[in-house]
Image (cartoon, rainbow, N blue to C red; front, top):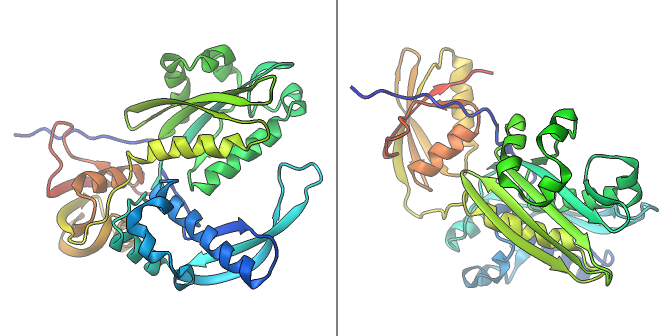
Length: 354
């Protein structure tokens, strides 16, 4: 008799909104600026959806770029606030919403990777070594950090993460954090200390990003992250005056996304998914809504209903393992699959009521 193990994932991956819309700066409101803005916004959206900052260079996508307007659902001009400027000046921007069905078809036909909207939340430890103020965590909001430009760094990080559609949170920097991880330990990228210090936040992944500015104005740094049991380290640099955070985050997300992306298949695979604990029609509707939100799900049918047990026949684009990962990360389904059991054509879960 097989013994089933129950696994509960406390950290809830976040459902990211706005993946099919882009906001890009433009020179003015002329037709020429609008055309350039639509192309830039399409690139922004495809980068968010695929998890690849170089996606516009992929050969298979080039035939679809001759007329970006063919994918547009709505477009309008609006001002973009300059959050890095003390004067809070604004610049012209173009807001473009793209038709989801058209974009999804583009991705499928070009066989591009898909980073599902149910994405891991990243706990971010950001450390700067300042020549005057010394080392500090960005986000502590102490007076020395703010006077040295910590707010601008945090705004730049926030902008870069939103541009990639990646949810994140900052530590509390309270007494427990201070006792668990010192700024020098974080600067040294001590994964053996960062990991236990991060566990209290129950995030899906953690990131340590450090940087400093040389006497010539060059920014140098490195990042280390851990997600889904995978750990990756890399460094980055930017010349004086260059925006370094966007480049650093691009490299980070490009690497991290490889764990979660899949290539949509022209032919889907059917997986039977059994959900226990569905005790009301309201819960039944909630289960179906949860499945329909997942990009890996192409379609689904009711296979059987018996008592509080609902079985669905699900057409999956990314395979049973990706479906399993997405369902567990939703926080609404507790796996009933043994830890040593291969994920094949039948999965079993317990529904977690809100």
